[in-house]
Length: 329
Image 1: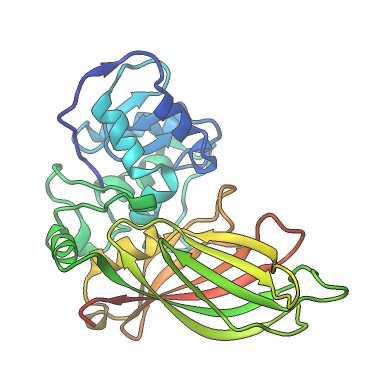
Image 2: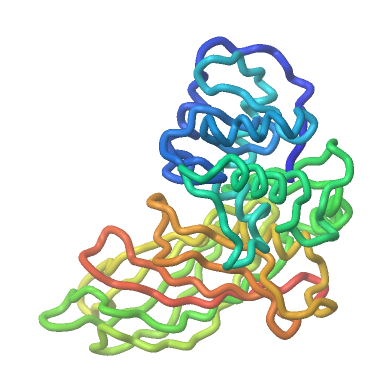
């Protein structure tokens, strides 16, 4: 969805540090299109890392659709590097380009035929069959940027919405988080724990009630946070409540809000749309997801179910439901 070229075209010799760091992310260690390991090519304007076989197909699409560069052999301009970094890599790009990929659609494998590979890549990038029709790009002068960790999502298809959100104040929307349950939480007292959940977004902090002596607590509690224009991840921590000492940590996780926020802002008023999937947060080795998390419109509301494995702890999982509420709701 991104065919943005930067004005900064100063060439950079060798493989620059920012590009190397981006390649180390687990989702960028496999081809964005077929899953082949150790991709050494990239589409600089789309923002994905791809294998040699897929790069041949991308090249045939034309540079106006996909600007193919070798990670190790070609000279990169600063603008090309910035484009890759701003998108954030394969997971973020695929969350847009494959948001409507049917489950039964045959995505190519590393050893797929050239015919199958070409059909999929053309459908994904040239025909844009897996995007919402109103988001399909007619002109090549478009822009897509990741919103992770304060980055902005800018595209001519939704630039008016973005400007409106930015002009009305510090926040772009409201996030309602339903903390549903915890499973197999860690023991922090003699035989059990008294858990509660803390959610943090920027300077905001909210928490659930304490569940006494329960390693599989059910909260079903809704907590509300405002989403600032420059937001980071939603941080989740589980604590064991103690009366006579400091509360013990029982694990933590982060929720990437980018797939939900970018999809919600791009699609506009969800109440005017039918039930559908509009985005996806992909499970990778770098995040706490147990399974891919889809963003859906359900009865006019943008919602996302999230199943997390708690980090830095011996056991524990959490189930959440996120709901996006626009400021004008």
